[in-house]
Image (cartoon, rainbow, N blue to C red; front, side):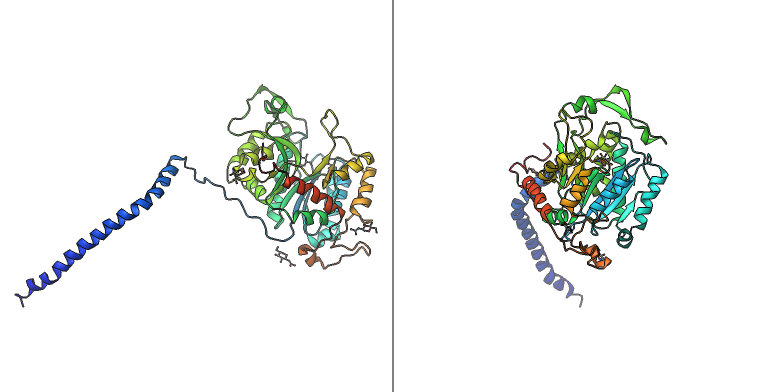
Length: 418
Ligand SMILES: *[C@@H]1O[C@H](CO)[C@@H](O)[C@H](O)[C@H]1NC(C)=O
Ligand SMILES: *[C@@H]1O[C@H](CO)[C@@H](O)[C@H](O)[C@H]1NC(C)=O
Ligand SMILES: *[C@@H]1O[C@H](CO)[C@@H](O)[C@H](O)[C@H]1NC(C)=O
Ligand SMILES: *[C@@H]1O[C@H](CO)[C@@H](O)[C@H](O)[C@H]1NC(C)=O
């Protein structure tokens, strides 16, 4: 037995050494062969090490919905004395698929706000469909001050939290009015990408550099109980170098992914720019423009139009001029879906109601969901909310001309945020 042992050891020792040698050799060969193909990988690795390392170097942009027909979330706001025009605008814009937030600022009396709250609470259609809400905790909004932006953000946040799956956010005031029906609008928008943001903008801030960007203003609406105008600090500041300023129209239609981005602020840009604009005169004409154009992930989604017909005097004054029957044809020819600004009970609104919207006596605009003749609903309420059936009219053709013109312009892709 004992004499056999070394013999046995010898028997397996040689093959073990041999196989070890062989496997080492194979390993060397495989490393040698793969090193040539790895060299490329190695290089890109080294290159990326040279770039600054952010925790999130790329933003995650939220997805758009795949519903065949989009939904719109509207904010309609007003101030003292705007209650009745606000109701009228709301009815003219109403559609069961959409979501609405209405706001009367703190300058309006408690009675006026209560009256609007009761209207929203008692209108049978709103009660059944539950898609209209009032911003009950009203804001103090200073004209030209940053509280106008905070009010818009407030309503967008409410609509994001409670409004379900909408696709675009539109900010209007009680002195705005639609020129197309919601069936026209939803029909036309169902054909375009849902990530587009209609925001009129330019980087050419011109005279605004001295009049707007350099002065520092303070809005008492940020800390005061009573409304008073903005005031100026004696110091001036320089133009930002960390991001570029943009300016444009205060009226816009913003996509759900962009609203998600600026409300959540998972990239700090929307928050930093918001704080910068706290001391900027007429911040609604710059805040969203500056954020969207400095966010690489969103700048290519901009369409340079505000979807409004607005008539400025020449030379422009602080306010656009009030539209009247004389402007009717220009409004229609602009192909825009909205116009402003209208005086209360302005006769041209009746002309728009009868000729463009086909309003019913109660002020609602008929569509596929609503029977024009018998003034009754065509669907049960539950089905109305999700119905994708629309009845587009001539307004859809006009709007299609406007949008197709914008999207097919030959410099469309080259001119984002220029
Ligand atoms: C939103 O609506 C109000 C009107 O109530 C307007 O004054 C403001 O400039 C609008 N735009 C933005 C971006 O807040
Ligand atoms: C935006 O468009 C420009 C020009 O077409 C392109 O170079 C750039 O990569 C695009 N950016 C994104 C984030 O898609
Ligand atoms: C509703 O009826 C009115 C008159 O009865 C008509 O002028 C209008 O075009 C109709 N609207 C729609 C959307 O069918
Ligand atoms: C309508 O669609 C939503 C989702 O978009 C769904 O949660 C809801 O149940 C639908 N309602 C009806 C009545 O089909």
